[in-house]
Length: 215
Ligand SMILES: [Zn+2]
Image (cartoon, rainbow, N blue to C red; front, side, top):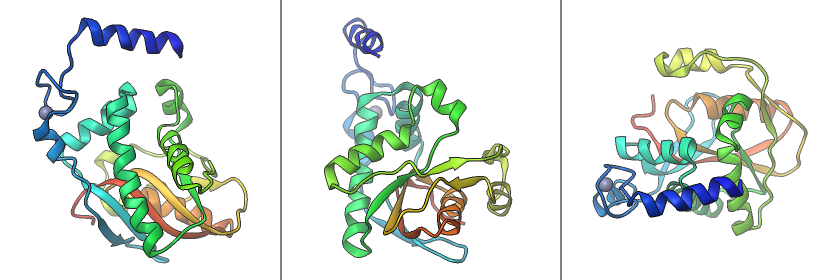
């Protein structure tokens, strides 16, 4: 870990900063790209029963996609911070309007987490936990392989994911589920199904980004 950090520090000396959104030399994220990462508040309800509210902060765009990728694949600190702030923004609204007792991150697949060197969403969820005082629980686990979602339409995504996660143990109180991006909502729906099957109450889901339209 320390070696990784010193390599990154060296790279910053050898290679000047480029905007992670557009690649322009200078800041780590330029003012133009920063505008594409302006946290608003988006509220919507999941499409399938039983439903739950989803709070998100940033509209998905090609630039937002690069921020997510830079955080997930390259562990870029500035990208983490942008996503963390967006999550914090959406979480504030969810807590104010719905409430919740603890946070549950959507896990990455074990092989993905291994190659990245961390559970990306869980890491951000622990930061949110430290700031809000709400406990974070890594309560979800993938229990079977699923097909790559990118080529599937909304309906096939739900089918593809159904029964693919399980909750590790019962927790009393209301959960808030945390993820980086909501597109069709299929992943969140499956997570909530698994938690509710275990008897855990889910108050809301919070994501940094939202891809519109959600259908
Ligand atoms: Zn830029």
